[in-house]
Length: 330
Ligand code: NAD
Image (cartoon, rainbow, N blue to C red):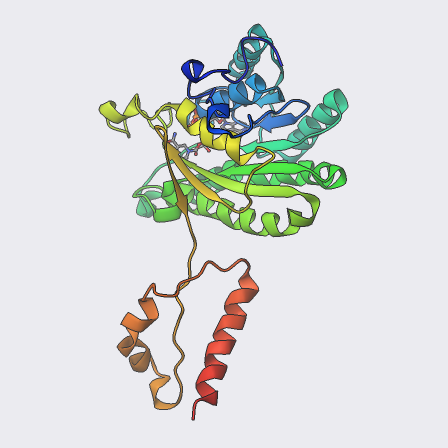
């Protein structure tokens, strides 16, 4: 790793990109020898992700189409500028202008990374656009455009990198989700649907990747970038730095990464989102009616004994068990 661009060595040198962890007895997260592809890395969060991983030794593909916030236009300049920043600090990176929504371009990007560096260890699906409209005014084109970049883009990159990750028994993938998807946001039906779909993609890829040491997680950022300019109040904009979010991203793609973890990150604050299911109830006979169900709502909704299913089949088995328990009651 290049001198002067790595993690801080002492307690006084820590910055948000270079957290000083050894003082707390935690091993420094190194990415020496790792190859990372970060989509949409010409600015905003992707840029700070790229800088941080390069600072810790990764060789980085800085992908960006270089369009405006709506995905219109295109220029190689933003990605090339990030590569120049990395190189100036002694790191290794290459710019790539693939449109993540185009499977052929993505395939070629992954092939070029393999050709150049022999592997792909880390994939950060970060590229994104907005086409905000209230649902009543949203066109099918506006819905598709957002799904194409966020969801299909993450499918294309993951699909291209997956066989290599499997073969080398190592992979770290992060999908960038959003509070808009997890909880909803007025005017963002397309974006919310795409961002929650990325959680679904994570759920199953985490299961299918487990035996190959491929770990798949989601990052839900809150950051002052061009995407949130005018949306985040001025006083919070500066506080919610992309660098502070990148701290979470680096952990999510590290060797010690969890899998199937939804990490909220903003301004140095972090939270985990769970998809939980309540313990549930079972009805039978004359109670097995819509009215009977409505009468038991407080039991149904009680969070006592709620669990986080590790895969879909767990829900099926649980419901079957609840029904069986009821039948067995005298
Ligand atoms: P940003 O606009 O600065 O970054 C997005 C980048 O993606 C841009 O550089 C853009 O050129 C690139 N891009 C767009 N379409 C592309 C395509 N088809 N192929 C390749 N690159 C493409 O915004 P940001 O805030 O840094 O957003 C990064 C990610 O974080 C996005 O997925 C966004 O939805 C998500 N996010 C951001 C926030 C936030 O608070 N900033 C909150 C939730 C989610």
